[in-house]
Amino acid sequence: MNFIEKKFMIPELKGISQKTIEEHLKLYSGYVKSANLILEKIAELRKTDEEISKNTYLISELQRRFSFEFDGMRNHEYYFEQFEGGAKPIDEKSDLVEKIKETWESVDAWLLRFKEIAMTRGIGWAVLYFDKKTNTLNHSWVEEQHLGHLTGADVILALDMWEHSYMLDYVPSEKKKYVEAFFANLNFTVAESRYLDVK
Image 1 (spheres, rainbow, N blue to C red):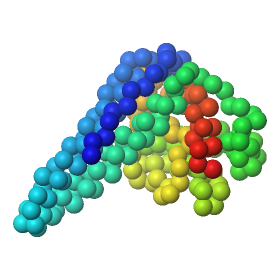
Image 2: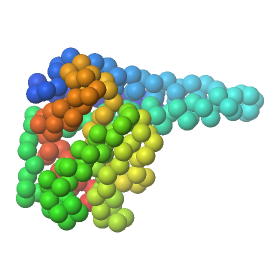
Image 3: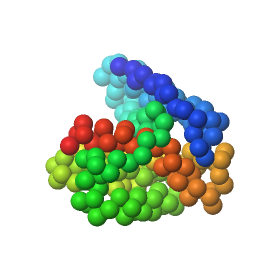
């Protein structure tokens, strides 16, 4: 099994430079390659029972690393898809907005909470999820790429808050400007489609 690197049709963005996107896509490519390499290496180390026994520790550590690389790949796919097709505003009549209002009373209240999470110190992701089991929207701060994901919940919106997402355009103390740029460029219909697909 090999994971395939996706290609994204990202238009020129406001407040997020083409150079940033180009460099960011290279990092995404690295996650895809690393996830594939780890699986190949594990397969090599497990060719015989003797090799499995001899390489147990190494196999375990590679498996641990796999979740980081896999989630790095998948998180970036969610992220870049949200820019395709150009900026599209929030549709106040959409099912997702109705659910947001049911949960946070208003879109503005939700946006404020989401942006607060995005400003969490450290590297990671601000993510909006839908949990089918409880029929609820929930937020999470995902540390690095893989720590803090809500098990079984579906990603509706993902905002990359690693410095590589904005450092060519903003200094660290200005990352709030990057968050605003993200929402200015967001194709909200992507989030709406994800919600309709899983609700």
